[in-house]
Image (cartoon, rainbow, N blue to C red; front, side, top):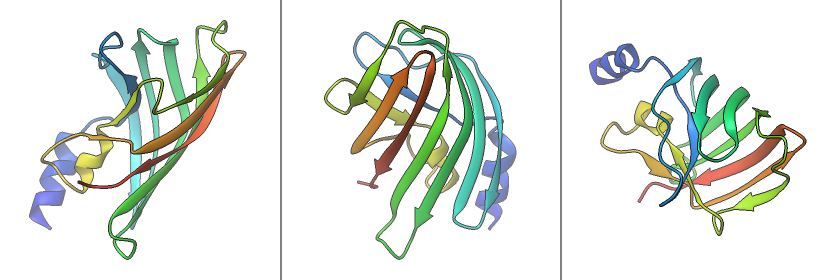
Length: 132
């Protein structure tokens, strides 16, 4: 319990973001979160080489110990680059989650599967993680 409390005090924002060899991890992230049992509700704001400025207006993370620690996330929000349109998956880039540190402070997690649809400056999607 003490570890979780210290960890919660040290994390000021959470995010999930596209990452690849040509898409670096965002530097400056702002936002907030609320943890309710096995769910985290969060918002985030950051700049990315892919999509420009991202505003995650609704992030919902579900964590299940009963399902061998499978974690899934639903996200939606806006991107500033409205010329990007399409559905993106793990075949296009990696999807990084730093919020996973709420449960496992040892490392960030990359999604094993995701589908993010971007259209006219808006995005939504589902992301699945499984601890290694």
